[in-house]
Length: 379
Image 1 (cartoon, one colour):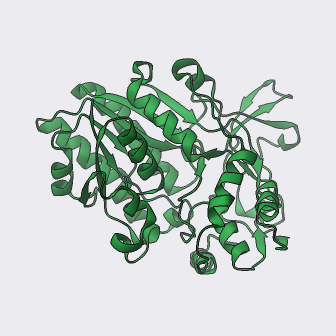
Image 2: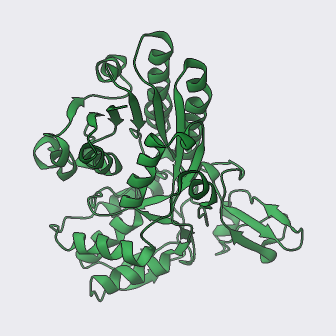
């Protein structure tokens, strides 16, 4: 397989993957609509991500919701890495039709074409997400078993009670790594669409002779990610606030945690999925296998930027946010030999070193919060 189509290939993960594949001798095509939310209003002249690949790939400026654009891009491809998607968890809760149309509808069009027309595609890698799990996996010493708490509700969180509940056993729950067999119960429209994408790929592809692989990426970050998109990525949001001399407002009590995985590790895992036959037909977590809480994130950023920014723990919260989730990496290590090369401290240093080279831009964070507040999702 030498001809690879990356949808969303001008985005953060896609462009990094494209450059690495080109270095390895692959011929890469990209289908991307250069969304202003990611690339700015003048993407063709100002988007660093797009400019990094435009002379090295066959570029199709188009959208995954267009059958015509799909048919143009699919011709002659051996494999597809399907990244193109709307990605804001909070935003998905009020732009429901858009998220469903792009994420679910776009994937459906691709599969419909592949199921009904001649093509040369042999493998599809789908970018799934840790968001399909919803809340992470916990262990109850009292029950001596794994449990999966339901989504947190407004009536608890408005009183500052942010920990998850499970039949009144919250005090005895212990967070553990979420493995691929864990319960799938997404808490946002975005998570639902990613679950649907993954299920369609893993169900349809074997019936039409295409090898499927799904990667459930944790929170991906690194040099090159958007510093102006306020809907995804607290590292970018916090960094932009710090560089603009503003305080950081931490939601809840700051103890909520995520698994932050560096871009180079994500690219490595994805290429293993493309090249390693052990990946065929499988679903994998991609992360570091370590949870990092939001207070730690804020403190590490402030230290690396040598800033005097204050951290305000506000008690605010967003409906649909999860409390904790981090990846169990046993399966991807056993089958593909993948282990992350960057922990949070080493990865965040490379990220902040890059941010320091970038022009400081206005934060759109306040506008995004106002949007969510107007929709009743921010308290």
